[in-house]
Amino acid sequence: MRIAEDLSRRFDLPLAGYRDRVWVLHEYVASLISRKQPNPDKIRPAVARALATLTRACDIPKPLAQLAAIEDFKLFVSLSCDDLLLRALRTVEARAEAYAYGIRSETNGRAVDLPDKWAGKIS
Image (cartoon, rainbow, N blue to C red; front, top):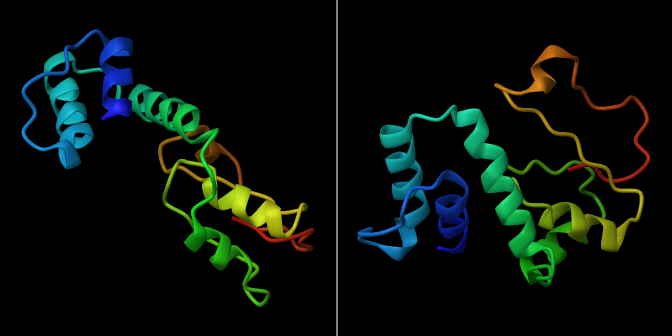
């Protein structure tokens, strides 16, 4: 809900009349795209910034901490745009690194691959 509220301020489209709190962000973004027709590549970073602001001060969820602590796991893949998994990995191993790839982003113009020698865990 708070991310949708943040988007409402950024894109100047009121947040009202959404049926279900669980789906409010999804419904709001769909409404934003259909009404204002912004470039979707501008919405993703706005969601990521709002999410980063909301999660900055929150504790790492216990399941992520438990996952990060598994010694034999060296590579983790996340589809989320928050940094909670990376933060969890860095509590176990300070050298943990993150690599990002987006099919429609600037990473598409350069090779993005895992390094030959890993300094630590990778997300």
